[in-house]
Length: 293
Image (cartoon, rainbow, N blue to C red; front, side, top):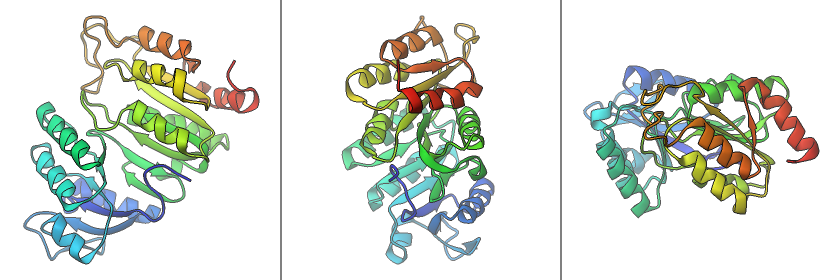
């Protein structure tokens, strides 16, 4: 089993005619993703990589039933694109777009919660269930089917950790990014609940970074609610106070969200915290062999 997506997931690509949207559509199709339609206002009637393009999500759904959308539209239009997908009845949104205004993201998050919609991102690399489907921009060749679930804030670090596991012959159930912005749809806690309920996921990897407090919240949740071994890596050990590290949400302010507070909270919750991404293979092998000690 996987979480959120599998080989039956039917996908609409919003922003399919843009440069990034069209390239990523081709890569997702090559991976096996069931993309049924694309949407770009004013460009209905075209095709991209053989996929029909419609002016609105509702028009697309009349011809092609779907359950999810991946959004590549510019930040200025992202809120409207997300609202359109939610109103049309889609239940999973993957928002790749970055630099969306915080207030727009808050409105998307609030509307999604009212309608029971799951939102990954903004500023997420997406989600992949290896060997089945991917809704995202991650390089599919770094992943293989297996028993480890990965949830991350950092795209490239999650690629590196998944690649290291794959090279060692350790596959993954589902890997996803919650997004690197200050406000995101799902949190670590939301994803931990899903991995806990997934019988095929035997261990969980958290890839965190400085800023926000989602890792500390995850630690509190793990302590009482997660029965599976969890391994974590926190990026940003040498980031200076008050300086943003890459992502909008990766900034230490007033002493909150430091590497030290996150590592301490996770270790107190029984999580095995590694110092470098290359240590992930031995850490996972240890928890599979001995459990957490």
